[in-house]
Each structure stands twice: as C-alpha cells, then as structure tokens.
Length: 114
Length: 114
Image (cartoon, rainbow over all chains, first blue to last red; front, side, top):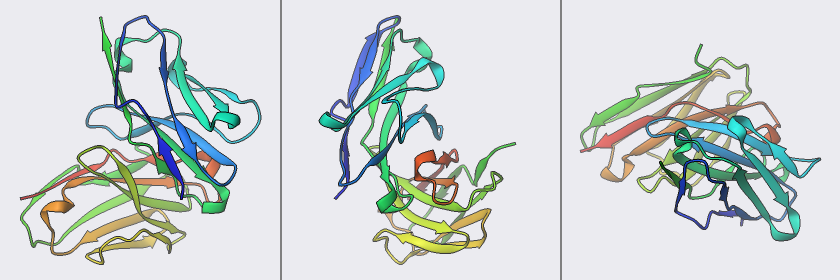
C-alpha cells in the first residue's frame, strides 16, 4: 500500500535560518510528489510539485524540493525562513496507476522563533 | 473569485442530526474530492467524482453520501451524525487525468458534533 512518512511532527527554527522538512514515500510506481502548506484555519495551498524532469523543483515563497529516487525522498528546503512561514506542511504522493488519489503524510508543524 | 468554495465554513450540530456541506469550483476541473482531516491533522480521502461519476469511495460509512449534480459541484450529505464525525472536511478539485498537477483545495468546513 502507498504510504507517506513525515518523520518530524514539529520543527522549530530561528528566523533567517535554513529549513529542511523530510518526506519519505513508499510507492510501487513512479510517483507524483507534492508539498502543501496549511496556515491555521485555512485550506491547503500547493507549494510545489514534481512529476518528471529536473529532480530539483522550485516552488512559491522561496521553497524548493529535491526528488531522490534512491532514497524515496522528497525533502522540502528553504535557505532563509521568515516568520510568516510558520504553518503546517504536508507532503503528498500520487501515481498514475492509482488515478488521481493523493496520499498525504501526517504533516510537520513549523515554528519560527525570532 | 474563489476557485473552490465550501459552505458553511463552520457547522455545529447535535448527534443524530442530518447535515450537508456544499462545494463549488469555478476552475473548469473535471474531478472533485472530499477529504477528511481529523483532530491530528491527518488527511484522508473519502470520495472522488469525475464528471459527475463516482470513482473513489474509500471505506466511508454509508451515512456519508456524496452528490454531484454537475461537474462544478460536489456536495456531502451526512446522516445520523456521530461524535466521531467531528473533523474538518475539505473539498478539492483537479483536472481530469492529471494526478501530476495536484489539487486545488477549498478552505474547509469545520464540523463539530455535540
């Protein structure tokens, strides 16, 4: 069965510091990979996606993610975090073989300290 | 213009009642979804409709009945509400056969059953 693991429930970083949020997946197919962000009381906003081509993808708000097939990972990074980045981040995986269904990880809560 | 809109945003009701949540998208997408986000923020797919046809039904109690009058609308009706139904319900949409493009989410409906 498909699964997505986000090992870190909470992460706290200082404003201006770099950030990496981890995501590992288990899929028996070539996956489509996504990162979404959810601010308190809000819906989910798509940050970036990967489905083919360059394994380093750029997203909105200065985020990037790298697909590493050998490690089954799709980690999200940002070189310098802003206080407004505090939110919950979800990794999601889909595959053509499974239609349009996305499977989400449990989320990582990012706290930014000034 | 809101791309995916859900109503109501908040819903508080007593056990045993029947309630509906409405969703509309103006993106021209062919596929719509209902996801449930529990108290631990875990997101799980409930239903998916493609052009008014049910294509995913994920072991959801039959008290939950989706209805899609046209491809721009997907409503969720819940009968005999139980305490465990308390959650945030998200509607989402995507282009047909475009798992790679991800979803556009609504802002959610917070259902509280008392």
